[in-house]
Length: 266
Image (tube, rainbow, N blue to C red; front, side, top):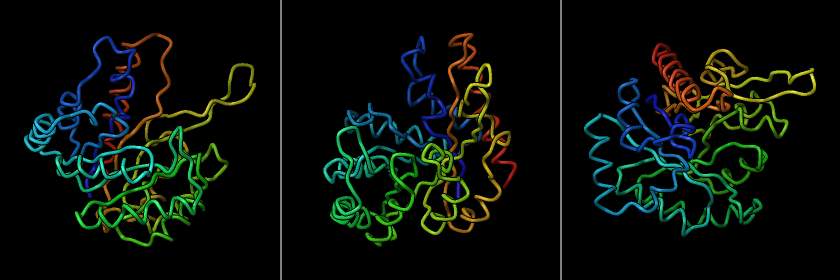
């Protein structure tokens, strides 16, 4: 098991709102400086255009910093997943996170099972595990139906219990349903706050340990230390009214707080 950081922890600092968006190399160096052991390049589209030399440089940088790499994408079309398997080979990656749906493809459980049965054996042959994330677009029961139907130890679940709240699924229920099949954990805390005038709620991120995430309960159920499951820091940090500098500073503080909290739990 290792503790690490995702590109999602740098959401605003790599966005179009950043005067100079951080590069992957800068994120890797920051992760190492903060004490992370793994970096998950998740939903970072530019990686798909990297040539062999760029991928080799990225892998060498991670090696020099003592970081393992993971990849993340969306969708389960076999051609796309094979592309990420090739990237995994170039980068020395052994875990690829994905999601069942994309903007133009929303397979039902039957189609999803068929597509994954076509490609997961290739992942298994190369020692790479594919993890499907829990999130609100797909019922956890449906996700587990697909994972169980494919029935391959190289297909599992990337657990992020906060995502499914928007589907009115309780985080504790998501953890219980997925725990035996979890291969990766996204660690982010979350909370509801009242809107002005008490008209509704905002559901957003908060510093780890200050919200509704039952971290200890999740760890007890999944047992990542025993099973070699990496824990990856992410955030749902809202844009701050004061602007980019404040938002970026707070994003860094949340990341530092999260990784420090995880490291203290060792």
